[in-house]
Amino acid sequence: MSLLDRPLALGKLTGTIYDFEHEGDELPLHVHGEQDIHISIVARGKLKAFGPDGTWETVAESGSVLDWEVGQYHGFIALESNTRLVNIVKE
Image: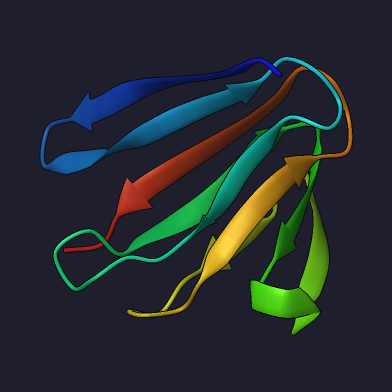
C-alpha cells in the first residue's frame, strides 16, 4: 500500500493532499471534530468513499467535491492508481 500525504497551506486555507499510488490504497475510516472538519476534492483519478459497516458508499471521480459534517465517519479506497485527494479544512 502506498498512500502519501503532505500538508497543504495556501494563505488561510489549510488541509492535506493525499496521493494514492496504487488502486486499492486506502485512507481508513475516520472522523473529524469542529476544529478539523473539511471538504474533499478528487483532483485526479477515482475513489470510493465509504461509511462505517457499509452504511453508505459513493464513487467520486476527478472533479467531485464531498462536503463532510462534524462527526460523520468516512474513509476512501482508490479505484485507480495515481489518484489524488485534496482535503481543505472548513473555517
